[in-house]
Image (cartoon, rainbow, N blue to C red; front, side, top):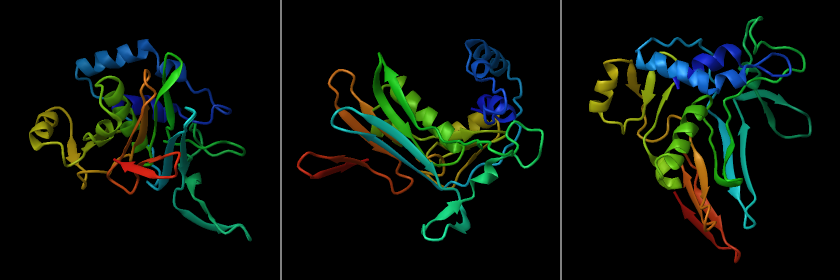
Length: 244
């Protein structure tokens, strides 16, 4: 995580305005370079970028025909601005630009600001198998990737993958949920600073995911217990099933 943000923060900006080296950041060669540095216990330095306020909405949906969507809407904090007659306040997500000139993410006319939102649909053999996303500012990124790994690499169900304990690292500190035992943190602390967030559940990205069995097409859902989200099935007869 820390290595990813070390590459992300100095370069991320609107690709219509700056050359973002995405191919280099996600290349096998770059991964090998980071693996060598991590194995050698080399320190990783991250340029700090302020996080977004954690007030974002995400929904993952699959319909009866197999159509799927992952949708994240950034609410930010209210700017206090209302267009007359519209009845809603605009957010303040302009704060997600870099405040000084000369940075790839510096503000400019017509330029899109950066975001930590990562709504995603994961495909296998050309068919969707995982619909996922979360609110939670840049903590979205680190939480969503852990749940994806839980499903794809550890064969967890949607609910188990979402409910597993998580951590976040974007700079000089690992932050983890209270459910992770202190004996684990003590071992990590020998090499890297780590601290608990206040919550056993939540406090990081609030992931909502749906899995689709590639053979049977059966759906399963999981919703983070750190907030008010839920996994819900609306049946053909109008009845509702809720889990997770």
